[in-house]
Length: 307
Image 1 (cartoon, rainbow, N blue to C red):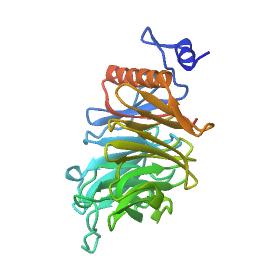
Image 2: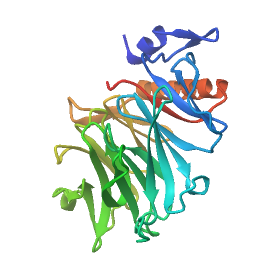
Image 3: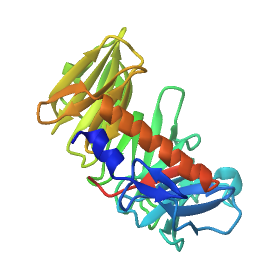
Image 4: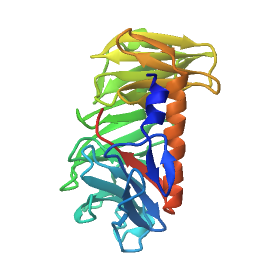
């Protein structure tokens, strides 16, 4: 049976309607007004997690799905020394910790880097990060202890992508006109083979189990999709159009344009046409959007077990 037939055959019900893409054990956290709510993937089990009325953003599940981090902006915090605060709660809404993203130290020393917070996430099961512009050309990814709030390290570059199961963050950086790929402050030697002085990076994605890293890089009118394993090139695919996007799908990668979808086949170490997987991804996206809309939410973040 083909993939799409399997998906359509395994339906479940929500509000009297069949879901074409049931997700076992998946769940979602989202905002409704200023408060956080969570629910099962089919919309059941709705639970309000916060009750303070403070505006929030960026709710994000931890890798194991047992905690949630969210951002309270600078203008909503009583601490003028921070760019904002990352609040960590349990999956049931119990407070865990408050992590300030400092603009200056208690002694008044200005903390360089982040001018404002654009995103947050988990660097591993215990620690969180904040990303944002440091200047018009470079961003900072600041990793902080999820308990004490202590700054662990900072990375400077663009395109940050975290692998929480390994505690690794990949990103691009350009020094002396040479574009390089970094993982945790270490430039990969393969960078000189991957990039030219004309290369423009667009995205980085880890596979779900973090054993592979996929890159999308523009070179003139073409886009190169490169899959790395243990720092070495496993596959390379070049497309002539520049309107392709890269995304994680299950434990592999999808690249798509407005009329084509390719999936990475790790066994063959190559991309292949994947219209069914593309349709399945559209089904999942549409059904997830419908569930959040029915629950009156926005800014959702979904969690499901690693596959």
